[in-house]
Image 1: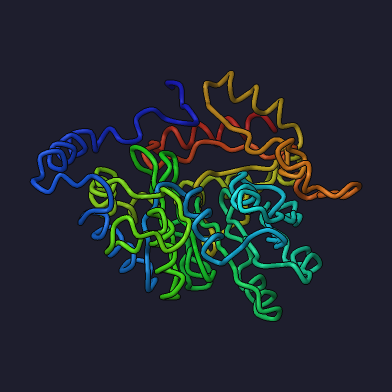
Image 2 (image 1 turned 45 degrees about the vertical axis):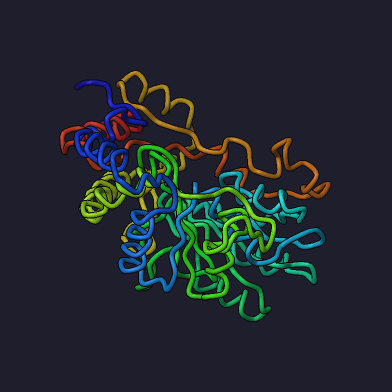
Length: 372
């Protein structure tokens, strides 16, 4: 069995010629428009149709989408936004960069997503928004979070960067919050050959503001007329063309990821009392951007997988409140045991849609052999 990398170098091999053709098409288009052109508008419309969102605004990245969403809500100095303590750092930096305070809520030690009970505990007079994030294989408990937010009249920014295509209780990811964000970073489920992201909302005023903010506060009609201080978070036409090309096969790739996850979960269920927890079984509220285990002897298992030439990956080994960048926002004496547990025990294994059945079986066998 050849080496199975965690980050495969051949993600876009089947699209290589299509990418070259699209690059030539955009480059030779008489319009010579390389950002925010008709292809970007077509992609926004395609995602609006497929998600059911009233408005979809393409932007430079998932991080850019979070920055735009938080700014569109008017977050600024003196405000607080509740974010997960275990997550990718943009949930916190998007708040801090506006002079506001990220308030870290703990996560469930099993699912690794934000704990609604801790969210409710942390709400105060200065709370301007709540930003739950879907992580790895599991969507956050959006029904409970939305209920808490509604009771307090607080908007929700749904960080669905890793969860495009996931569905919880019949509602697609990105559609639960007042604003939702997807990422097109290369290794995401709907990744691209570069960067990109979108903001989704049903609120026309928020959508209009996000559109202005992504282009230096301009309204798209009057150039060099800046209605407010915005950002440069514009979308690339080549990326838009490539994503339009790849969208047709997105559901098939998602289904393949889900089938691999179903197989892993069934194989790993007997290992729960031996120090390995697989994500909860089922598909409701699952995204399978990566398949992340919780492992008591993580270092030993990772070394074993390396010997078997299987790549693996540890995410966020230090919770956000423990990062030097966010030390100023971590109250003295505060603890986040769920986040620490996730940081200490998560281990992701390959779940790429182009893995063969033989490779998937080999990976599962290797994990089971370690414990047996």
